[in-house]
Length: 331
Length: 189
Image 1 (spheres, rainbow over the protein chains, first blue to last red):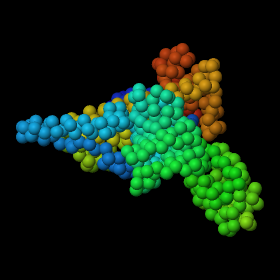
Image 2: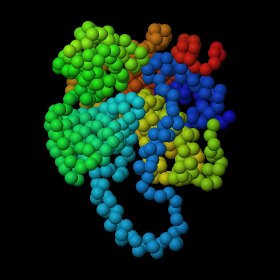
Image 3: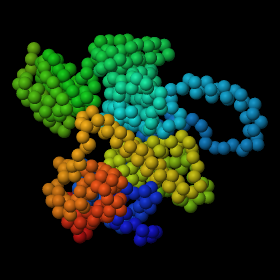
Image 4: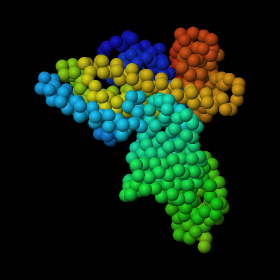
């Protein structure tokens, strides 16, 4: 066994408290390869975890992490790995250098909004809904199975992030000196400070504005949206269509707010299902025709359905994440 | 557990441009790195994001390492620096919030337990000597770094470290049976 004498309990306490240096963490990692050491460590960790059970680490799933990483790896590779022997290539390299330089300049020009030097952070939500703060204090809530990339630090003249898939709600901190730009494959979205929702589905993009003013643009078209408006672009013609039906319930997954005003239950159910990732069935089709007027904020799906059941004289039952409403419906 | 042997790597160098090699390195170190990141960030999702970003960058660059220990050092150092950086962001965000709310400096509340802490555990922590308890709670519940605790209480970092060790030693003795509750491995005494 190597260096065991140097892995003291005090070092383990430091490690658990998050104060271990990388060198220490490295040695602990090596030390933990031995079964007995692991057992000792886990005994101490159990006590640490008991003092704050919800802040315990969860098991790491290396296999699915690898799968997630692989999808990012193919899109990110820009140069080949092997070094060719210099002598042969040199003469050719000299003659194509001019052409290469021009291509590189053109490439950089076309991709000028993409930061090339700062460290990037890749965020994926998988099966959960994730809310994060960006380096400027703006907040992003990622819906399920969505992916976003942003830099560790925003440069001084812009705030650029890439939405790679799925859906996200942005609450952008006001900063008139630095436009906030969301780069999606179909279009870019530009704001200085406001809140809006972006949904990517297949080839299409839908931007809905909650508050403030948002400019959506690509090579062929552009449009400026204000609160309550939605722009939609499908892959076909790259032109935007604007509608004035931005329903804030669509981003309740981020804001926690659901507002219904004589809303048909079929729609109420649709919004609850999206926000809480559950399934709601009805025993009697005429339940869909009932209307609801209510406001919910940061409630649970169960509470909301209980209230609906009470208000509309229905009953609700639950089996895991599937709810069922029954009773006499409406006309 | 691992198919890739460091000895082979010492001969060839570790070329992370090769996907097979890269995968092996990932399998060997991913979990350990995530655990380390978690200890600093106290958030499993954020920790995994940081580690994934580091690996993605390594892949992008197709870096080559002379030997396993250099690669390992690089990985752990990267995790450390990115995590500390991320903590700094959080502080900035909290500062913005506080400025909007009140002018008075944030009050230390080392007496507040999170709801989910078991009564038995709470009782044990309350039996700690005063300074020991204060330091422990500031670390565990306010998630302050040792240097921050030292500064706020006007003591040395060394003292903070000793108090944490003292607290954990005490709690381990008091909570000997906790392992059954939290379901870890064998029932040795």
